[in-house]
Structure formats: structure tokens, C-alpha cells
Amino acid sequence: MFLPNRNALYRQPLDAADVETLGIAGADTVERFLARRDNHVATPLRELPALAAELGLGALHVKDEGFRLGLGSFKALGGAYAVFRLVLEEAGKRLGRPVDVGDLDRPEVRSVAATMTVACATDGNHGRSVAQGAELVGARAAIFVHAGVSEERVAAIARYGAEMIRVDGNYDDSVRQAARIAAEKGWTVVSDTSWPGYERIPGLVMQGYTAIVREALRQLSEPPTHVFVQAGVGGIAAAVAGHLTIVLGAARPVFTVVEPARAACVFGAAKAGSPVKIAHGEATVMAMLECYEASPVAWRVLARVADGFMTVDEDDAVAVMRRLARPVGNDPAIVAGESGGVGLAGLVRAMADHKAELGLDGASRVLVINTEGATDPRRYAELVGMSEADVLAGKVLSGATQ
Ligand SMILES: Cc1ncc(COP(=O)(O)O)c(C=O)c1O
Image (cartoon, rainbow, N blue to C red; front, top):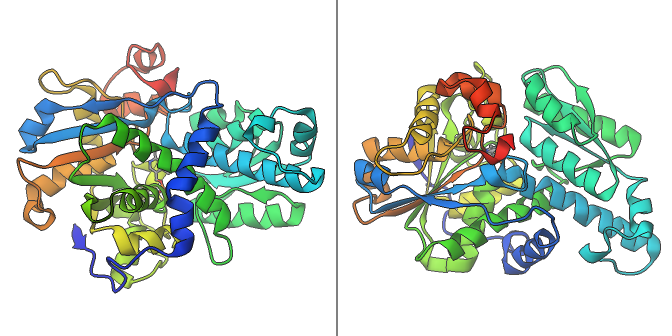
């Protein structure tokens, strides 16, 4: 399904708060922090000329976030960055002097961090980032996972020394539980979704994602004409669309948000004109996108700068994982986890059904983001039809399994 943005706020200027969050100064800070990470390198931008030709496009590029900071997904950019910023702010307050990223390893900053516990709910990837950030600065992490999060994903987070807390219900229930228990215990909630009165920290998480856009614009010879980004609560879509709008202005690409039909909460917000709780149905294979209420901060941005909202079916997501694993012509193989290729799945659908509405043709240069590698190798192997041993042995090229 495709819904053009007919919102009253469409094409209105971004709110000042969102320009501050997603603008150039914020992206500069993110890069300054990233430069100090041991394993930071720009993720690869893959060109897929054979698939572009098959689809009838001028060019197709995939930014491969499977290689991000050894964590296997773009979420590595957000949670850990927010944890660093919050620890530095607290240390600055307690020490009574400004501290910056270069001070993170100082004993006096680490002793402040040691008194802090950061908490969040997660489908898997965000919690891994928060836990990694906490471990790096010497803080504690308490990560809440709902019933549908696989044991593999839980183990991948626990590896960073986090306390894992299983809760009943779905992702939205785990968000509420994390907020309630954190308030009781005095923990700092580092959530990737926002709610009324809680916007700044999810804003920092989104600010972390702007690094993807910066890198992509440097790696491309000219800006894309179209961008398709998948959404859970809408954080990455808003960060990408917002930053592109701030840096490119009227020359920004046509931006489409893509979601599973079974969990299309941003689509729901677009229909209703503001974030609403959508009905729960069957679980989606696109596990990281299983969210039933959009983040209000993300929606505030997308209402203004997204051009359209799409849903894709379960089969679309799996077909795209297989297509990326076994590419046509000389295109490079890409390992895309269940939620990784969903932007591309949206593009494939759009080329079949919505070309005219989106102005897609043989001159279009499209950018999509593979938001995760095989972050759950067993599930990946099952869906793509490979052996798990091959995936784990690294025979399948993926940052996520390294
Ligand atoms: C791999 C992957 N892709 C996309 C998303 C969606 O991100 P957001 O919730 O910011 O919309 C997530 C969220 O966890 C994710 O893990």
C-alpha cells in the first residue's frame, strides 16, 4: 500500500528543536565522538548496477549498516552515543567543570559512570548499542526484552555485561515496563522512542543516526533522487529524512517510509494525522520493525519531510533478503537481516505499482539502507536457505557475525 503525504504539516519548515537535533552541528558532534571509537570506519556503500537495470532505474546504492561498529546494525550509532553524552553531562555536573569525549577514559569520569545505570526496552539492536555504550564507559545497563525477542538476540546483548530483564507482552509493553522500573530505581532511560515529556534522549539517539547520511553523501558522486527507509517507531527514517532536508534543502530526494503491513505505525500516524496506537495482529518476520505506535519526535519530522508512506508484505521482506544474498550479474552479495532489506523491498514494490506517484524512472538514482546484517544468524540462515554453520563461519560476508 502507498499513501502520499497529505498531512497539513507537509513541506512546512522543521521545528527549531528538530533542526538542532538533526542539523549540521549535531552531526559534527556525532562524528567527533565516532572518531574516538576504536573500530569506527565508514560502512560500505554498495552499488548494484544489475539490479538497478532489472528494476528500470538509473542507479541503486545500498548503505550497508551490517558493518557498523562490530554490532551488525545502524543502531550501534544511536544508543551508545546517547549513553556517552549522558555520562559526560552527569560528570560535568558533578565535577563542576566541562568534560568532553576525550575525557571519557579519565578515572574521575569513569567513577561517575560507575554510579549510573542506563535502561531501555529493545527488540534486539538498540539494547545491544546501549549495553555496548555502558560497558565502554563503565556504567551499568538494564535491558528489557519482550516475549518475542529470540534467545540469540538476548545472548548478543548480555555479552556486553548488561542485566537482561524479560517482560510479558510486546515491544510497547516492554517500553512501558522499562520506564516504570527505571523511575522506581533511579535509572536513566535511554529509549529510541519518545513520548510526551520525554524527547531529548530519543533525540540524541536519532542524532547518532545522522552519521549514515553524512557518510553516504560523501561516498556518492551525486545526491540520490529517491531514498527509501524502513521504520519501526520512525527514528531512523526521521533522522535520515530530516538531515537530508537540512543539508540539501529544496534539492532533497523524494523520501518514502517503508513498514511491514502487520506493524505499520508510521503509516497509521500518516492516516490519522498524529501518532496512534495501531491494532496488534500476527507477529511480523521483520522483527525489528514490530512497533505499534510511532515516536512523536520522529513523526513531527516525517509529517513535514516524508513524501510517502508504504507497507510491504512478509514475502516481500524475505524475497529481498534472498535477492541480496544471491545477486544478479556482477552485483555484490549483501547480508541483510529480516529487517535490513525492507527499504529495498519497498522500492521493488514501488517500481511495480507506484512509479508514477514517486517519479521513479530510468534516470532515478536510489539510495536504500541495509539497516542490519545477520544479527540473528540462525533466523537468517533459515530464511535465506543457507546453513547456520556457514553464516557463523563467516562464509557469508557480514559484519554482524564477526
Ligand atoms: C535493523 C533495524 N532496522 C530498522 C529499525 C527501525 O528503526 P526505528 O525504530 O528507529 O524506526 C530497527 C529498529 O530497531 C532495526 O533494528
